[in-house]
Amino acid sequence: ETELLAYIADCPDLKIDTTQLTVHELEDIIRTRIIAHTNTNLALIFRSFGFKYGVPVDADFVFDIRCLPNPHRIRELRPLTGLDQPVIHYLDNHPDVQQMYTDIRQYLENWLPRFEQGNRLYMSIAIGCTGGQHRSVYLAEKLGKHFASYLQNVLVRHRERNHD
Image (cartoon, rainbow, N blue to C red; front, side):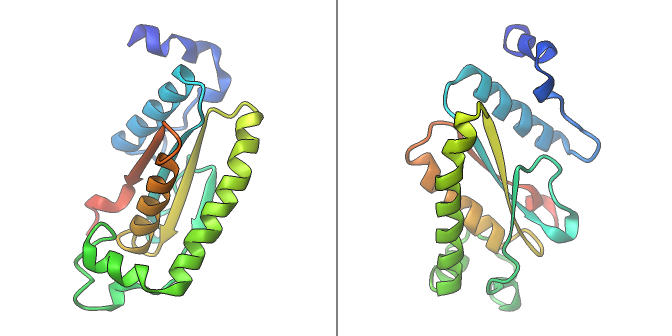
């Protein structure tokens, strides 16, 4: 641990504001930044969140997807999350959801290499919907899988998994 974390003292870009972070969020940030500094590839973390709980303080990009169809409004889907097959099926079948996915994916594919060329080692991409249970989870997972298919250092986290 001492060897892995030794560079932090000399790197001002690694300072972390922990004021509003949970222990798990801090752990993800540290893990992502350690991976970034021990690898030559850009590290990505996709984080789903609910706007009603606030925007993640460490996000480099925030995408607001509250305009998409909301599974929470369907009684059978309400207790589920974007990890559950009925919600995935519901969102897979909405053209607006697929268009949003395509637009975000293309934006990131276009701009992430430029950030990497500018010596960025990690990027945090936050995907937000109202409660952070359905749409944002679904899109964070889908984007994470896409980028993990050709990048080594991709994490997907769901901040609101423990909220009601």
